[in-house]
Amino acid sequence: MDLWVIFLTGLTTGGLTCLAIQGGLLVTAITRTTVAVQPQPARQRGRRRAAPQPVTAVQPAQNLWPVVYFLAAKLVSHTLLGLPLGALGAAVQITAAAQGIMQIGVGLFMLATALNMFNVHPIFRYVTIQPPKALTRLVRNQSRSQSIFAPALLGFMTVLIPCGTTQAMMVLAISTGSPLLGALVMLVFVLGTSPTFLVLGFLATRLRGQFQRLFATGAAVLILVLGLLSFNAGLNLLGSPLAPERIVASLFRSGGYAAAPQIVNGVQELTINVRQDGYAPSYWRVESGRPLRLRLLTENTYSCALAFTIPNLGIERTLPITGVEVIDLPPQPEGYLFFTCSMGMYSGTIEVQKGAA
Image (tube, rainbow, N blue to C red; front, side, top):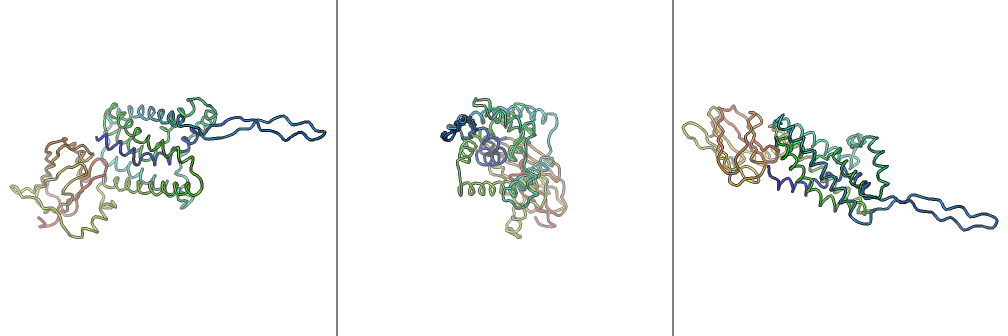
């Protein structure tokens, strides 16, 4: 588990995706309602001047403190959520296939959210997450408060409507199998989202006209890209050849370079360097009918590449930060064997051909 990667995920992508889902609560938190007295027209001859009428005025907060309260409560709620998630992972380990299905679901949700933002079709409006009616009434009531409680309550409520990236972090928290590590994952992720959420959330309420439309379009494009990446990662975890990454790679490869194994006592040995940014070499061509031996080399590696899995064979290994892990495989039939990290971010392919090696 790479906490730095988790923080950067929150800083770069989590902020915008969370803003798209939780922006309504943020806007409510930084909007202040006041009761003002509306002046009445001057008294006309023969008529008494009407009594002043109170009206409700809505204006944005004059400083960032409501946003700070909002984000602090959000941090607390998500950290507390990480505790039971980690405990759940200790009792029920999530397989690569199950995580892949979750990733695909998250990706489809994000794609539908982006298409809804583009107004492609009314059907995509159904993906919009709405808080329960009772929660909505509570929000309206508490938003009239000028104290710390209103934005803090709204920030705490964000745990009820997680964005796609947050859901991915929740899956990661479950996979840790530890309440403390689960809480740490959620804590670091929300800390990463906070700067982006703070700046973009505050500026989004100030944008008007053309700038507001440009911001909405940019956010929709980014969510669309993130949805595709999540969908691709899910297919990687399922060992599917239909992952967009693999389709694109096969088009450009077209029978080109592939690493060849060494033959040691009749066994095909594949030496794979496990790096921060993936696996190298990532494409191999081996011979069917001969056993395989994977030698996975790590050296100060801290990324999710340490969680090595071969979905089609149900093999999952946690590699040492520095060291060698050996995986022996029986002879494989002709076709493709895919390997990936536990998040589907980094992957590789073993092409099995007759007489290839």
